[in-house]
Length: 471
Image (cartoon, rainbow, N blue to C red; front, side, top):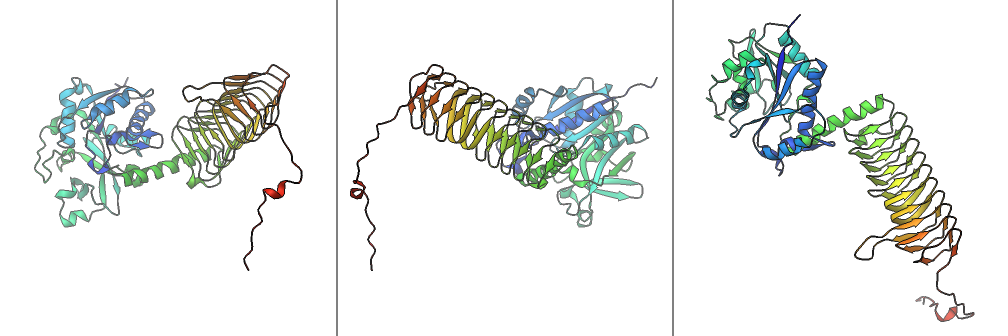
C-alpha cells in the first residue's frame, strides 16, 4: 500500500500592509461578507479535503497578530491551524525559516505548500495542479506564474534554456522589467529540499530581505507553471485592489447562483455576499444588496434597491423596491414594501402585508396581518388577520423604558390611531379612526377616543383669506 504523504500548508500573513492605509491588519480586510484571510483558509482546506491529504495548516503572523488571532478564534467552521510568529518581517524566506524553527515536527512533512494571505481569489484547483505536478514527477519545487501586461511590482520569471530564476522588481534590470511572465507567490516544495535551502539564502538585494524565490536557482529541479487566469492571483495591497477583487469575486458568486436557477434582471448590479443562500426560482431585480447570513427561499421576488441583512425570507415572498430588512424573518407569501423597513427582531408569519413607509421593530405579526402604509409598530405583537389602517403608531417609549403593545386577532384598527404602551387589545376589537388608546380593551369591544367636533355654520369666511392679485 502506498504511503500517504503528509503536507504542510503555510499561509504568509505577517506583513504590515502599509499601502492599505487602514487601522486593521490586512488579513482582516472585509470582502463580501468575510475577511481576506477566510478565503485563503477555505481554499487551503478545500485543497486538503479534495485530495484526501493528511495535512496541517500553518498561519505565519506578525503585524497586529493579536487581532488576527482574536478574529480566527471566533471562526466557527474550518480546520484548526497552528500559528507561527514572525516578529520581524525580513522577507518570505525568513518567514519560512520561522516555520522550520517553531514547528518541532516540521521534518515529518513530505511537502510544503505556500500561499500568500492576501490572495483571496486563488481556488482549490490551482493548488491541486501544482501539487500533482510535484508529487508525480521529479521536481524539487514549482510555482504558479501568469502573464501580466502591466507587471510592475511583481517578481519576473527570467527563463533561460530549461531553467529559470526569479528577479524582484527592485532588483530587476530594464530588460528584465519588460518581462510579462510574473511570479504569483504560490509555491509547492518538497519539504526536504526547502529545509536544506531556506537557511542558505542571503539577503544580498536592495531590500535587504531574505527572498523565498532564491530557492528557484538554476541548479535546482524547479518549474514555473503558467496559469491562464491571471486575475485569480491578484494580491491585495491597497483598497483599489480590494475593490477590484470584490468585483471579480462578485461575478463568480452571482454567476454561480444564476447557474443554480436564480434569475437576475441585471446580474452585474447586484451585491450578494458569499455568506448568502438563495433558492432556485427566485428573481432578483437590479441594485439590491444581500448581506450576512441571509437566506432567500424558493420563488421569491426581491425588488430593485432592496437591502437585506442577516434575515430569512421564506418561499413565494415578495420584497418590493427600496425596502430594508435587518435581522428579521419574513414568512411565505408575504408582501413587503415598497419603502418598508423591518428592523431587528421582527418576525412576520405567512401571507402578511407590510406596505409602503411602514417601519417595524421587534414586532411579531401573525398570519394574514395587513399594515398597508405609513405606520410604526414597535415592541408589539399583532394577531391573525388584523387590519391596521394608515398612520398607526405604537407609542412604545416613555423617555426611559420601552413598553409593549399586544393586539389580538381579527381586529380593525382605524387610521391615525395611537396606542400608548403598555396596552393590550383583545380579539375581534374595533378602534375608530383618530383614536388614542391608553387603556386595554377586552375581546369584542369598540373604542373611540377623539375630541368632540364642533361645527359652526356660515363662519368659514372669517378664516379664509383671499389672495390679492396685483394688477
